[in-house]
Length: 428
Image (cartoon, rainbow, N blue to C red; front, top):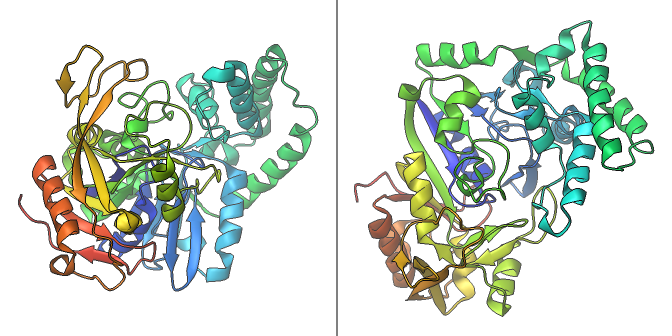
């Protein structure tokens, strides 16, 4: 079976750590969407490492890691990631495969990303400017380049044809590319040559053969469900399907192969970039949350917007993903608060109270309705089991499990891989 692990909020939920924790149960870990706009942070043995495109199972030598066809891959970032992993002496050319059908991010995709954001002015999306959106545009427009194309003797011609189209668009937007593109292209083609030493495969066959052999696969998502191109807070979303269904299209597996769906969420909410955020705290409480949680983007370094946990949004994400188990991250960030709030409903401008996300959330002012809880104000460092939790935290967890109708099987109490409270899946 294929178990899926994904974020239930606006990304940055801590997926990398949980993939690393769960990885020993699996023989394959596969990324199914997104690109270098994702940053999965892993901490262990005193080290901190951020992965952007490489699956988070890479630190386990006996696991095959796959970059799936649904990913948009930047060869330059890929080379830098591999260089950064060299100190760990990992067998990277043996346990990392890249789908030939994964799309390639070109240097001009980054330039287009910047040009499009510049043209939007105050209405900008808040893109990471990594070229993700333009790369997916070319994929959907049936003119993009894919990893398998780098093996073709005509690759340079294909590249030049697409870049000519990009240059025309950049010129129409009065965006200068002449000063930066030559050096970026030199770096790009060197990275493409570097990438050829890895296994470039028809990964859908690899994945399905692994299933036929009885191996367990963990599908790793990037970003979060509320950034899904179809079901997120459009247009303030990413350019791929970040939900469970994306694992099928992003790896080439049948829906009937999906087993457990691990939904990851923080004990509060964060968001990077523009877009609606009903429970955002634009006060000292929000700033305290940001500092305590070190809420700055792993990819961009941008400060994250912070707010209380949003149950209507969380229930929505659970529904569209078919979540079977919940994982709550960064509970320790709330240690400092004497009172903690959870948004249980929204009040709409006409006075209607609802648990549903409005279609026009971007244009509708919703007022969160909160339920308050006593804070636990306890250091959780030495808490290793559910029955050791402070009573206030236990009450917080019980309320969430009852409200969401799902077990919270893992609770993370600090960034380190060992700082996790785990219990077997329960029936709520």
